[in-house]
Image (cartoon, rainbow, N blue to C red; front, side):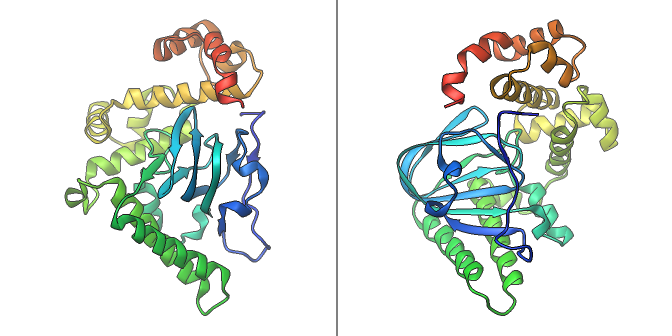
Length: 293
């Protein structure tokens, strides 16, 4: 898909490890914090305690500062532009660490790892800093010590950390969101389908059929939840994939159009310009120095 971008698999310390790791950022492999675009097959949370710079996630830049959480979901292209040495922890896990249906539902409700309309960073202040620091430190303590019920303890602390992160993301609205609404659930299911099928299925009608709802009901739910239409969500995901291929591969626009299942290169070009105000060639020409350090 993005042939120039390394895809890093989860590599546990040994074959008997659970699909989870937490490491000081300073101990990560060199590529992890260099300005080199790369992707993962897993989820990563970075808890930043010191340092500065920028974190680029699929063409968007977030400022790096102490007491911030940065999120990278599977398949997202990201890299760091470090100004002052970044310190903190990298929390790495695969969805397989959660075996219970309720835990999978928790992952589905999180905003922080979504490719479409996802949350990329949370900057903390006040008592929230202490809360996150405590949870991260407990995770690190359990991970680095072989004690009774280690795996159960790790998954419990990770579950609590993810819940706290989502509550921080929902600050100001959490009282109204103690139970996930039917609209939010439908929207999350739609986003999951878009992530899986956007390249092959370009019509909202297909997703409505898969979800057994009308197009009108789906669009209303998505608009109510995220403020944009179901069609806009789908187009945004296609544009993101097109941008990744334009910047991180040498494929022609015609080849990219074929890979993304557009009728022909000219239709793809019109679609891309309508959504970005740039032709594919213009976007590729303007992007290398910004997104391919």
